[in-house]
Amino acid sequence: MTRDGRLLRGGVLAAVLLGVLAPILLGLWETGRAAFGVVPAIGATEASLEPWRILGDLPGLGTSLRLTLVTGFGATILSLLVAIGAAAAFHARPRRASRVLTPFLAAPHAALAIGLAFLISPSGWIARLVSPWATGWDLPPDIATVHDPWGAALILGLMIKEVPFLLLVILAALGQIPVRRQLAAARALGYGRGLVWIKVILPQVYPLIRLPIFAVLAFSLSVVDMAILLGPSTPPTLAVAITRWTFDPDTRMLMPAAAAAGLLAALTAAGIGLWILSERALSRLGRWWLRRGARGLSAEPGLFIATASLYGLLVLGALSLVALALWSVTWRWSFPHARPESWSLATWSRHGAASAETGWTTLAIAVLATGAALALAIAWLEGEDRARRTRARWAELLVYVPLIVPQIAFLYGLNVAALRVGAPGELLAVAWAHMLFVFPYVMIALSDPWRRLDRRLVSTAAALGAGPTRRLLAVKLPMLLRPLMTAAAIGFAVSVAQYLPTLFIGAGRVATLTTEAVTLSSGADRRIAGLYGLLQALLPYLVYAMALAVPLWLYRDRRDLRGGGPA
Image (cartoon, rainbow, N blue to C red; front, side, top):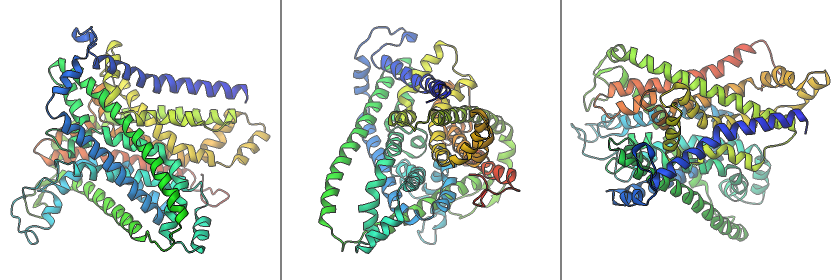
């Protein structure tokens, strides 16, 4: 390890610890203090268990816990099953799968949730398309398809976002396994394709995707914006209830809200622990099943159902975005007409100035957060190269910490810390809070392409006398322009989608398209909600288009050795 490598690696580690991990720990500490009655700002200085007693007496707590567990585990398990089954169909076409799935990763959670509500609500587009000729409905039916008591709409919305993410993670992990050779060998022994996938491929892939699964589980248990838009409301999931209690006009509710945040953090940790125990039980069962052989069984129906489910989710996601666009230019659309009766740009003209100002704020925050995260990720990966070391397991876990710890569990405490230094409501503070969650996704997106870069190019540059910095600027970054742009687009989309960090650290003084879209979705005017939801979705799509176009334009007259442009 060179001295230069040690310094860069140590500096990056210090930056991650101080800029990412320390704020999370500080937020958890402040939340923990409030959970036990210590909130000096409102005169509470004596530690006690009173917040927990108040929490236990709050109506609907048990139902909120049940809803949280049902929707969190339900969405994660179903998403994983669909992604695993669909991966069997797409493993030979990862680039095509990436092109199809990327638009759904780019779409913010709130925008998809608003569009899905426009689609599946009793007066939604689907009901309009089949009424009255197939249903006889001249009025919207009295059916709870959104905000249903078991959270089915929330599970569906979560799956539209989580299945593409998990599928891309699985396809990336398959690149580390000789899938075709193993499939051919097992098929030669008489096993069907589906059975080979489950018995041979899946046991090798699963250890590589455990951390992303934990991140999905933590997100599903603690999601707020989608739960507000699609989930039950009386009572809501625990994360939504915590948000309401935190912003209750009665400041005494801060303490039971903090206790509930601690409960949600413990629930998430217990959920991950239960998942690990289930893994071990299924592993033993799987080994027994492997020893039995059972060549005659067929898993093809299950793989077909998973693939069909994937296509169904993608169609729903696409129609949700189309519904946003339709409502934003609708003047009159009464039930049960299948399409708007009249069109108008009045909503755009009336709210154009306000939405443009909010859009510029959203853009500025996303650019700052993504730029900082991208610089930190490049420094991290370059530090690994100069130190001639691969990433340790503890370092990979460190990257995933912001995704595994529920946001609501530490953002209240982080807001308290920000109040002490006078930072809440500042745009830079909100951008920094976004960066906590943008950085892990940028690292995930950039790590594999960075490590797959042909090291012979770097060695050749070194042999010609180029130093480490020149090799980075003249060889690595130009060759990795496309992955860098893709990682930046992913980070930008993650920032645009952030709801809770803006709500807490912005202290109500920083409004983004996401916070406005969630607020306006509860109103009666679907046109305004559609406008903000569409604008929220358009920003990431424009950045993704730039990520595709810029490398093509810059290297339009060049070809690499494989004839495909830069890496």
